[in-house]
Amino acid sequence: MAEKHDNDRREPDASAQDVIEAPLDLAAAPVPIEQEKPYSIYTTPEKWVIVAIASLAGLFSPLTANIYFPAIPTIANAFHKSVELINLTVTVYMVLQGVSPMFWGTLADRTGRRPIFLACLLTLCVACIGIALTPTSDYWLLMLLRCLQAAGSASTVALGAGVIGDIATPAERGGFIGLYALGPMVGPAIGPVIGGGLADSLGWRAIFWFLCIGSALCFVCMLVFLPETLRRLVGDGSVIPSAIYRPLIPLVGHGRKDPSAPKPPGRPLRNPLRLFLEPDVVSLLIFTAIFCAVFYAITTTISTLFIVAYPFLNETDIGLCFLAIGGGMFLGSIFTGKLLDRDYRHMKELMIKQAEADPERKLKAEDVLKEEHFPIERVRLRWTPVYLGIFIVCCAGYGWCLEKRVNLAVPLVLQIICIGLYR
Image 1 (tube, rainbow, N blue to C red):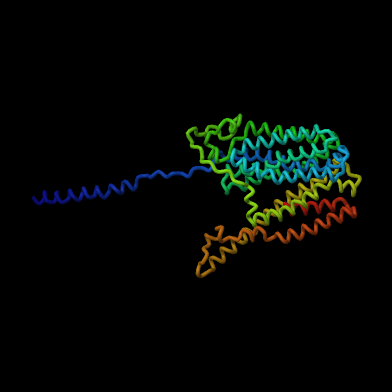
Image 2: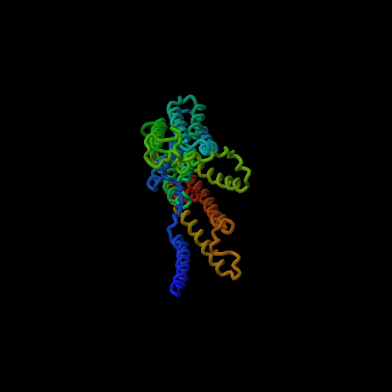
């Protein structure tokens, strides 16, 4: 009886132990962890390919503007117009270069990057054919086609930046923008050299045939290889769009498309002119516009002023003088970028030390980089007064050097400094 009683007492203990162990077994079971979905379906090498294609298109905006400069005196003689009137074709080009990206870019945010890229390059190609065939008696047609040329080429830089934003996270964009900037930076360097050589050997019309062939090849490259990247249309790239948005040869993203992927919701078309209602945006635009005006005043007049100051130069030599502009852009981008990065790190370290030394801990060290705490404007604009002072002195010195016809190396060095500060 005693043994039976003991067994009866042990059995409930055993069943209770089972009940206790059951939840432990469930807790020990592996729980699947949902992985974060990648920002884009494209691999890193594929992203580099897309950015390289966009950079090739971005080359044509500065190339089209700068390849024209060494031939200005020749074109003035061909059209029997003054240099000042031919310079007006540069002015109208600059106006359209500044205005057209607002509309092409807004349209690209609505209808897609790929068709607007193709439309811009096709417009540029047609305009170049028109200028190459323009009779020298029709100065008005030259003005009109230069406007059309600017409308086609100027927006490629903004479209390429949009492509990078579509396929890359903020942490990745720095490296991609570095590659992408090669196109817009190479244009001012090689454009005048090519333009001077073509105008000197084959005539000024060869410049526009060269641009026509180059833009046509870029058009074909984009038509064949560039996929649509606008996230409103293709999401992370997995959505299969209509035929006009698909490349003829799917070089990137092949096999990772999802036919069942839902199309992202659309966004309303926004008016880009509303940005002019923002005082901070307007002030930055005015300041940048002054720098840009001086930059074009220097680059546009190189061919005419250098011929007067240094009559031993031919068109090819003048084209080579524009290499100083490319060098200034290259060196200025590297130096300013490193300087800004150093100031950013210094301010970050200073604020972290102040936060750690604060006994009341009003600001935590991990909150230093938050937008509401970090003085990003002060960091980025710290050297602006110094840059502006050096820029003014160099511009004045540049004009004096040309008037006094000093050694050719001096104005070229001042060009490098001025353009480097502008960049």
